[in-house]
Amino acid sequence: MSWTFLATLQYDGTGFVGWQRQPAGRSVQIEFERVLERLFERRTVAHAAGRTDAGVHSIGQGVSFSAPATWTDSTLRRALNALLPSDCWVESVHPMQPGFHARKSALSRRYQYRIGLDEASASPFRRQFEWALGKPLDLELLSAATQVIRGEHDFRAFAAKTDKPHYRCRVIHAEWSRRTDGRGINLQIEADRFLQRMVRMLVGTMVDIGLGRRPLEDMAVLLRRDDNAETSPPAPPQGLYFAAVVYPPELFADPAGEPHAALHLA
Image 1 (cartoon, rainbow, N blue to C red):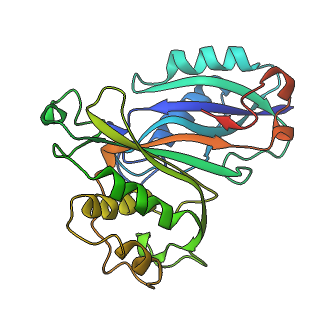
Image 2: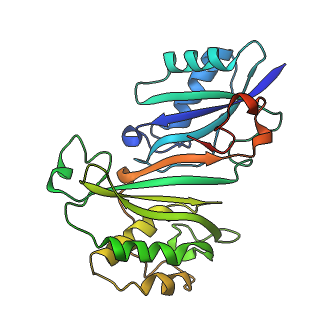
């Protein structure tokens, strides 16, 4: 007999080719499944809420897997953190209802993008974890650009691949804000689904607008295009973080014991 669990996983994406296992290179999925196999003495597949690209970080990735019924959420968390590499850390583990799937059961996902605007963003202690832009941006223009993308649109112009059945996504929330340290700005964006490199391509285009390299009107123009030929280059991966995922409360085996986890798991 086995139970389904959901782990909230943080990782530094610098040394990974991304979440998903690849023919070559070190992936987060391979590292996580290697630990599960060691713990359960059987091959166990782990499913993530979102597939992050190479160099992209996580502060709230949802990972589902099955475990023998002898394991509990607390013993699993301790065992995972004891065996995972130092660039991964499990924040929490929750028992879930049968049939739960980290990706298929998600209602929405949230990403964060961080940009350093000061000269010190080039520091080796910062540039692996933000876009070291090192120059000012027009926050009003950036905010106006996010207003254009809110709601449901065809985001084909902001997709790396053009072989999807459809490109419609519903952006629930998108907002730029200044960081409390005064050194940069962050984008918070939440949607029902994200296309490959969608956030990075949105950020790259918005930054060009914030630098005065292209007009604000281009955001609406791009949303009407059926290709990405006129879209700005994607922002660097190191500034992007998988931040949180939203699940229906009834999918948690003990929602009463997790008053906040039923919504934003991060």
